[in-house]
Length: 316
Image (cartoon, rainbow, N blue to C red; front, side, top):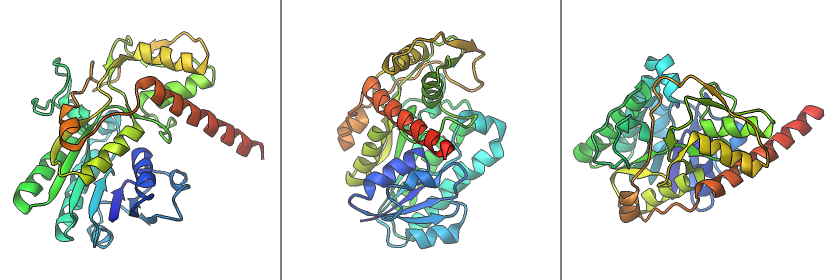
């Protein structure tokens, strides 16, 4: 099939594009604002890369022509970044998603699989989070992701465009960038611990997350394409761990012992997160293959290899 991955040079998008390229013709759209070309090294000869933005309707129409599925991964990520710049977050995540849906509708695309976020649930105390719970977004990023879900539903109901919205829970794994000030917690912890530096925990470390390995997210996207599942689905591991436990697990795998440093909590962050994944399991056959330790082992292995390669380049 012909498939399109918006944001395909990013962390999740590149992992997804690589797996899709094994069986399908893949077109990648990315403006490289957060994505990186080196993420595509393994597939650049197999996939068709288009440098451009999802705000460009003409570009989208050309790329989507004849496409069976569009995987809409492109977004301005990060809760904190959306708090710092809510207008840019809205333009990328809301206007951009609307552009994708309009182009998909006009080009006769079979299905749009949309990358949503667990942040739409907010800080409601009820656990686990279920898709029929009332959303309670606490950041512009969460609002933008929820707006994208609503647009997907409306385009399904009004225009007959098949859509599936996947609410990702704290995705981690190879290719996740630890350098940005908006980076997620696992790549920051891993790079610090591998460098012999103590991890910095924002808050008291008792906050919990349902961490999801990127390969399970890739599997969920492909299942969403191959199945008739439509609507909203939690994509997670289905287990939660505290940040204190996370830091301890990473140190154990890395065979090092460090005392964590604690700092003030980050604005907009939630206290606890845990997903009910029964809907994805029942409707598309999703079943996570990686628990936290097995996912962390692969992640740490990748970061170690990447650090060795960077040291060699610097030595040249």
